[in-house]
Image 1 (cartoon, one colour):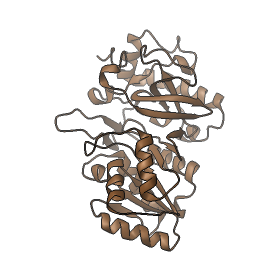
Image 2 (cartoon, rainbow, N blue to C red; image 1 turned 180 degrees about the vertical axis):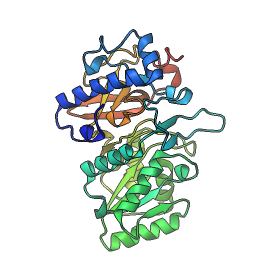
Image 3 (cartoon, one colour; image 1 turned 120 degrees about the horizontal axis):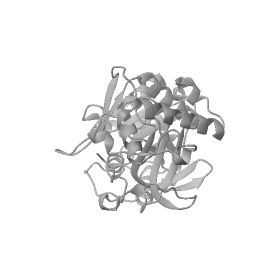
Length: 326
């Protein structure tokens, strides 16, 4: 199987396609859960000749099955957040170095050297539980910023306000990454006029507030922070790569990641550019689990490696995504 460096040096669509098909063959052979799913669809390496023909595993399988393509011991298990009694996803990671390489290279490709930033993290809902892949990533970014002002903030919004004011006064290039409800809490308590700070939301109200569409959220945050645009990070427990948006929820992806849009009425049919439907993600960093995931997100493919993430499917509207759960 290809080494991790192969996926991180992808420079053309043909290279991506070739490695995606190679990854499919590897995971069909080595991932029993994924192989059984493919067999239920009557798909196997001899019938799959293009990326569009690769079956996408419903993301819910990470809640019910060990989705692994490796016999190595787990380095770490990432888990999703969930309310009491709710099943959570588990991503068994057998090689943390691939995840670290993925998020470090991904961040650098969009934002440059992490050492140029002071990194402030307002992620209370994630800090308050174990197993968050986002906390692992942000902790690494904080550490590698090598900046004494970088750090996490839990509930001390006054201290965060004071730090942001200090960094603005001294013209420090700053990244403030936060969960949506906490960023709203901050702007409702204090006013800002940030000129040197990238404000990045990671989505989700985590049951703390009523969910709202991204346009409404960004309008409130832009006004509260005094910035022209709100950045967004798109990632999840079941993936080892992230997409980023610099404005309007239009996401771009690293070269080893791709989004396809499926028909909400027929989960096995892909839609052309400009159509809205379910988000299928190819993440080649997921070599040791499954690289082909049918998410429960709704999106639109805009072409040229960009897509818009519109929100979540209502569970009752996922027609076919979970029909083959066994």
